[in-house]
Length: 207
Image (cartoon, rainbow, N blue to C red; front, side):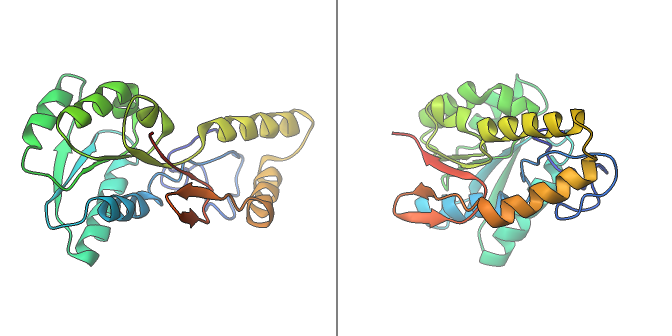
């Protein structure tokens, strides 16, 4: 697997640290980083206005991201405004419904939003909603900032897994070794402003 959304919830792995089974690969850590994305957005857009959350309820794992956002908001007394989208035609209507949510925009990663990254980034700018996104394409299309997995590096590592398995490595052993390598070697220095985040993700703002 490469860029899996939540391998534990979908039954591909027993845990991220010790996957077990016959699958190996990499995770986007989409659910795990939801709270951090919301926290960073509130640093950029402080105040009591609700945060608009754009999410696709029918996508696998995304309800878990919504629950993670709710838990993070509840713990800090922040308010969320849910914007559910089930097809491309609902995206514009979602932004129309977000007129009262001036606390910024949080987008959960899933196929529908990610396929419409350009549209969403442009609509957020037109709506004057500072956006926190899960992947780089949103920022490349004009969005404000993203905090999430480095897809280029994920696919690069996926190729390494494929090579090892073709040469006879067992998937579970490759996964254990990869997890150890991440802990021992990958301490990326992703920066946003003058802050450094010790996480295997990027934090990148548009210019």
